[in-house]
Length: 101
Image (cartoon, rainbow, N blue to C red; front, side, top):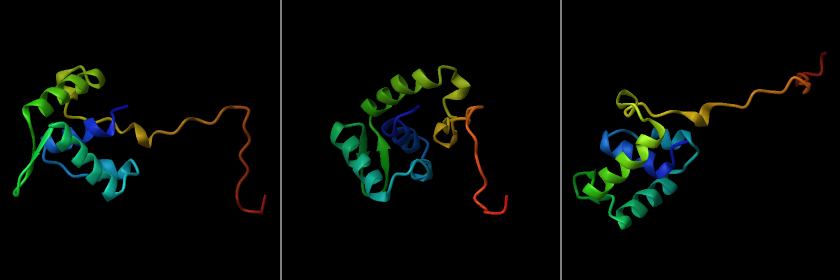
């Protein structure tokens, strides 16, 4: 699974929206802390008009994104593994919530 930091770098590179991070359950303050941490590490540059990746951020993104999407065509597709659920085992019984059985 792609870490939140790498996903943030990918979002900044493509000038995308933070909805992917919000779908993972992060609050706006947690996203702001991620941005501040990446700025402190030197991966992003914050100006008055925009947030963009530094050269170090581009290298970090390329190193880590190829671990998850080694093919060139898959580098722009971010897997949404947080939406997948584990299947229920055959031995587990699920009863309906309604009392009418």
